[in-house]
Image: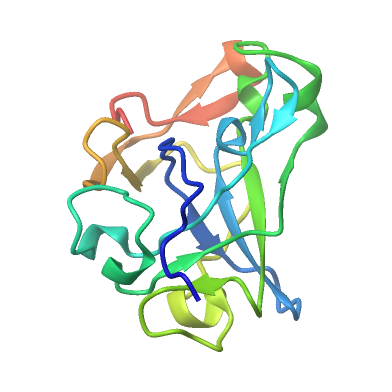
Length: 175
C-alpha cells in the first residue's frame, strides 16, 4: 500500500469539491478544462490526483507524497469537459475553460488518515451554479501556479468579457 503517487509529473492546477446534488457513489471537483483536457494534442490528462486543503500541507510544494497532506490525495476515475473545449483551441475555446473530475467514493483515497468516506463528505462541497451572476462585487479563492501551494484570495467587481462569449471575469485577480 504505497502512499506516494509515483507517476506524478509536476503540473499543478487548483480545484474545488462541488455539490453533485446527492448523487451516490461519487464526488465531483471543478477545475479548468485545460487541467483536464489538452486542447492542442486532443488528449485527456493522465495520472491526475486531488489534494484538498493543500494550504496546510507539511511539504513545501506539491510532491506526490499523500502522507504529508491533512486529507491525503484522491485519484479521479475520469475527467469531463464541454465539447466546445475539445472542438476548438485557445483562445477560441476560453469560454468553455471549465472541467470536472469524477472521484469514486471508494478506492480513490491515499495517504493521511486513510478514509472510508467519500471525498465530498470529508472535504465538504460547495454549491455550483451556471446562472448568470449579477454584475456585483464577488470573491474568489485559488492557488497560484508559480507559488504552489500558496492559497490566494481576490475580491473585485465582476466584469463582462464579450470577446469570450459574454463570460464574467475578475480582471485583477491573477489566479
